[in-house]
Length: 114
Image (cartoon, rainbow, N blue to C red; front, side, top):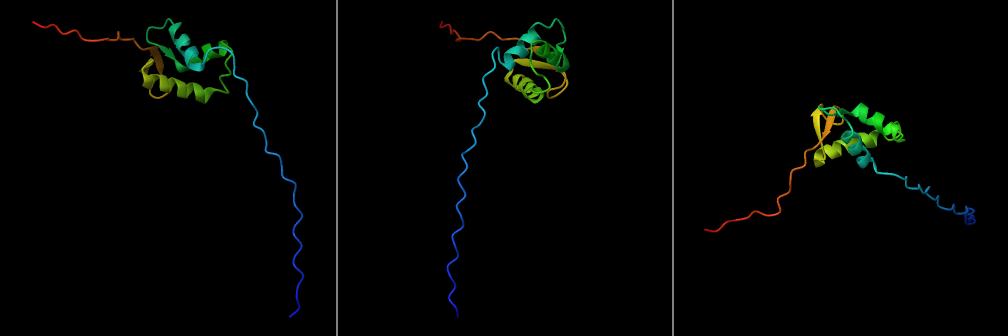
């Protein structure tokens, strides 16, 4: 048996510097839920405003609707579940929406003692 020379160590590959994530600057102006509430509030429709009409108002306020379509839909559905908006027609993100009527908060119940 002939002795074999130990295999040469593979040449070290220089370590790559980790990629830095692009830092996005925060957009100026109100957040998406505030814009949606403003769009619904300025609507004069008695039965509510449709999602398409909400998106038109947001587009007029310089929101990229095509880019943030999914965020708009999820924001509207979350606002319905939280009770900020009420859905008058449809299910999910489709249909018409109105601002929910705010109920006056009861701070405490007064008990009368006789």
